[in-house]
Amino acid sequence: MLSKQDEEIGSSWGYPKATILNRFIAKFIDFLIVAAIFQIPLQISFLASLVYLLIADGFASGRSIGKQLIGLQVVIPNPLRSVSFKESILRNFPLGVGFLFFHIPAIGWLLVLLIVGFESLLIIGNAKGHRIGDELAKTQVLDQMIPESLAK
Image (cartoon, helix red, strand yellow):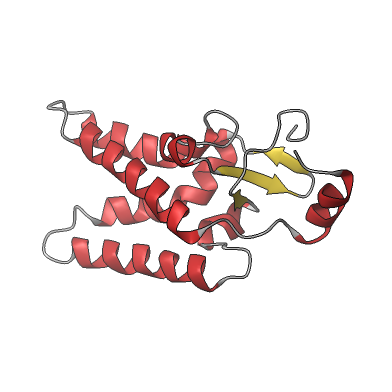
């Protein structure tokens, strides 16, 4: 649980950067779920995969299935609150664009690799661990779960 001092520090500049390895593992789990949905032999599997990719962080107080398994949470740091589906869509929009590019014959996989690679470099190099999606949605990924009473 965060102390009042931690909450005040967080509201002025954000919280400590989440562990990079944990973020990559959580996103990998989410990508496995997207791939599994995509393999369902229905005409709607592409759309269902894209929808999960976009809204995944809006479930369970800012925790996609991958983040729930690893113990991460996406929050809006100022004022501290959990993300909604709107913020989840905004923060995952670059990855959704990459998912759409994947279906371009011959070069689609290269475009996806460039987007995911660039986003990964931003996570590593940014002091708060922000990627483009985090900047768009004004979100941050935390290593610890913020109690519901603080994250409203």
